[in-house]
Length: 124
Length: 200
Image (cartoon, rainbow over all chains, first blue to last red; front, top):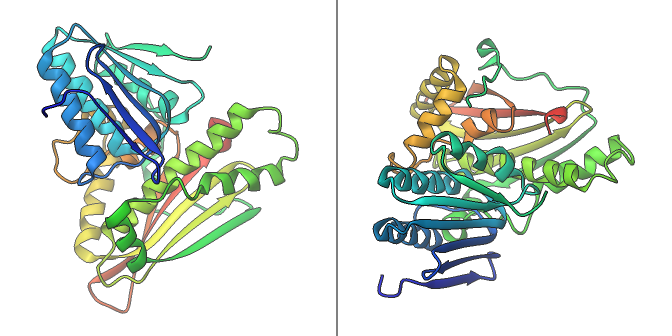
């Protein structure tokens, strides 16, 4: 990608994806049902690829306002976490919300594939 | 830490008994139209919430029980949304091309919310499902789940995580029922997910 930062807001499908390349923050919000041949899917993958290739010391994935994500979406986050883990030099933090079910039920399992994964919850 | 999930593999392949159903919503969806829409825009999850229907049914059963607990309400809505959308997506993806309908059912009773999806599949697809069911039956779901996470996206065109996450993360039971049809190579497939309300 020429431009390493970007913002996509799909009003009709009610999600937005934001990548802040200076601070290495990837934010997803709204409701996202990913499909493999979809633009959002490739966009997220290419940002994940970019972050991994830059090998920053720390990256934050902010999903605290992502109310819905399907299993394919969880899979691509898992893939990202595995690739970051394999690089050994990238610290990954996830900003999550306890009010969002897929995060308390599924996302937290990613700690089992990357024990150093840091969870920052926005609510008590 | 791996949490051992306790389930009885013998119960797979058998339909779950309907539990003194209180309220049930059945959606008979036009497969061809849904498939066209899905190929174009995906599942329109922001327009329609199956979880909201389940939640409203549950509120009828437990009047005022949930009123003060917004977190529990959100959890019920979001859990059923996740499960129903995963089942519906599988039905759209794996239906036989000659299929005309997909039936999605939501049954809310005192102990369980049951979500099921029925659609026509090819015999070949049934065999793929049977292999998958065998794999789940003879594995520790927790180990299988981690294995699946590790292999995320290595398989083209499937994440493989949907049904496993329903079993592992939502502590729901899944069963399958295959019914032969008048056509030799077509089978009616019904996937039933039973979500215990006390696990929410």
